[in-house]
Structure formats: C-alpha cells, structure tokens
Image (cartoon, rainbow, N blue to C red; front, side, top):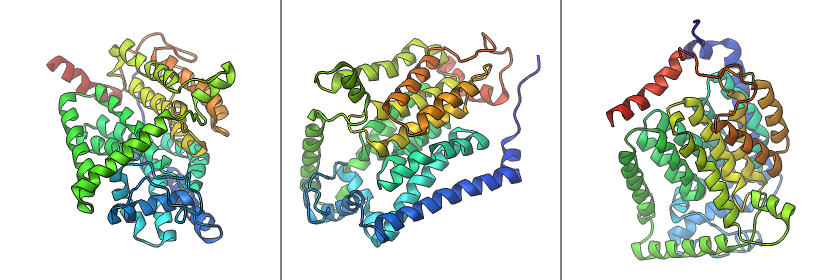
Length: 399
C-alpha cells in the first residue's frame, strides 16, 4: 500500500510564494493595528475599554478598589467596570506606563501576532496562512473594540500547542494568564487529559497559579491584595447572577422558546455536550485529528455558552472555525463541505451559524465524517501522525 506523505516542513517554509504570502498576512495584521490606533486614539476619542485596562495598574498601585466605577476616568461610562483579576491589573503595567497611542499599538500588536503565531503552531504553514486570513474579519472587530479576546484565543491555542509538545510549564502559564483575564480559559485544562504525566501537570498548574495569585504583592501589601480578591469575587458573583445573555446560545434558546430562566442550565448542558465525546471516544485520545477537533470545539464553546458574549468575542470562535475549516480529516472529501459551512459562519459570524458548526464539530468527535472515502484507518499511518501518537501510546503502556 502506498504510504501518504507530505512535503517536509522546511521545504514548505522555504517556498518563495509561501514566504510572500506570509509577509503579506503579517503586514496586513500590523497595518490593521496601526489603523486601530489612528481610529481609537488620534482621529477619534480614546476607547474606554483600553483606558480601563491601563487604569487598573495605577489603581492597584494606589491601593484603590479595582472594581469600583470611575466615571471621570472612563469617559462618563460608569457601567464599564474592570472585571479581571488583580493579577491581570498587574500584568497591564507594560501598557499603562507608555503614552496611550504607543500602548494601544503594542496591545493590538500583541493580540494580532500572538494569534497568528498560535495558528502556525497547530497547523502546517499553508493551512495556517489560510486560517489567519479566515479569522481576520473577527480579529479586526476585536482589535477595534480594544478587547482582550484575540489574546485569549491565542493563549488557549498556545496552551494546546505547548502541551502537544510536552511543554507543561509553558502550557500552564498560557492557561493561568488567560484565566487571570477571563475565567473560561481554564477549560483548556482538559487538554492535559490527552497527555502523559497528568499528575505532574496538575502540580505545575497549581504552582503557576499560586505565583500568579501572589504576583501583585510586588506593588501592593498582603492585606490590601486580599481585599482586592474579595472585591473581585463580589463582582464576579454579581455578574454570574445577572440575567444578561449576550450573543450566546442562551439568548438563542430564549428567542426560540420564550420565557425567562437562569443561564446555568443551558451552560451546564453545553459543558456536558462538550465533554461527552472525551468519555465516549477515549480510544481516540491518541489521534491528533481528534485532539485538534476538540480544540476547535472548545474555542466555539467558549463563545456560545458565555453569557457576556459580544461581537468582539467571536474572534475566539472564529479561530476555532478557521482551524476546523482548513484541516479536514484524512480519508474524506470533506474539504469542500467544511469550506461552505465555515464560510457561512465566518461571514458576519453570529450565534446560530456558529451553533450549527459547533454541532458538526461535536458530531465529528463522535466519529461521524463528511463524505467518508474510507471506513477504517489505513494500515500505515503518515510518519508525522505515527510520531505524534507514539508518546501517548507508550505512556499508556508504561502506566
């Protein structure tokens, strides 16, 4: 039987045409970051969201309540509050000290290029470039909103990529930094299920989390830091009890069914649906396609079941859809079907199209395939797939 092979990665990277496309995409990303600075700081007023990010460091330094309204500093928008952890407030220091325009450009560039880099770590070069183009419209919306969503998407993908390479410390740092800004990146801890030495990783995560929790002690006393965490818990508790549902699956269900109920039943159902394939298809944990498919599903889940999902949040989901679109499974002719479905979702990505794609992602995790050409795994796997499978298989046998 003829074995399936692919061009070596080094040869692909040396392709002049590929290099030109890569430069074009990076130039597009950098130019967009520059345009955002012009729009949000030079020609237009400074954006309140980024001002809140910058102020959080100075409030932490001054010992003020990070989560209190500061209308005078927020452009008269008392409803916009800082809702990230005290650690996040400390980590905003590099963007609080420089002038506003320089800081906004650095913040936007961090989100854009970190997301691009993360795509290159989970996809081969040509597919990564295509995914970077597909995700660009929602990346642009996120950059315009000066939000942290591009950074969050990148950190979740980086956590996956680093754990796939057995870099447990790097994966733990990516997850903890993401969780310092928004709680749901903790879902990336599930990636450790696919890896060996899970107990060791749990210890690494706990150690990194402890360091992150105590990091603001560099600029604030212990008693005041403890109070900041109490204030943070209070605002998170209030936020969780809020009946807001944003552009989420909860909003979609309410629109269809009518009535009013808490968000948590739908969120619980979504969480169970996300995790069910992990229990049902444990025999596929060693398959790189399954693991990558779970990554794309988790990225979609993070937006669909987030009761505060907004337009700028969809860059997280669109990153998952883009990865899913450009990586059809072996032994199928699913590329065309995936392209059509993904294009429908990515053009003005909203809740219902994303929900349809997410259901297809979940169906594939259970083993369903678009246009299957084969019914079983080939006798000989590709070299790179076999290499990826070997550590996981070996660890199970050793265990």
